[in-house]
Length: 110
Image (cartoon, rainbow, N blue to C red):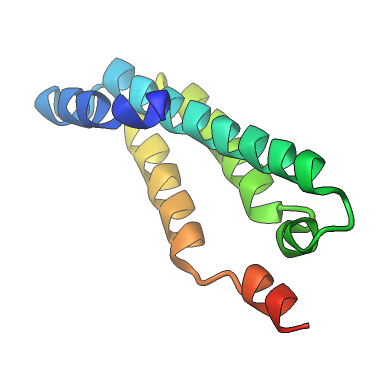
């Protein structure tokens, strides 16, 4: 929750500075750390419920989560060089998560 609380600050700073390199990189760092926190949360929940649980089956290999973290790492580094490209990568991850994920729905049906 801490990383999510920094979104308004990072977003505002990025907008106020016309998407300058450092604010775009900071925004990327905030979303990267939130993504890492989500990844850790899913691993802890799976460990708590067991590797054979419905939750573990629903989450599976969590390709979306791993791909998102990878793209965020690339975006943070590229933000210092080409900020607009980093913003494009942030939008790409957002679109990736807007596509419905049927894993949980499928695992509950079985």
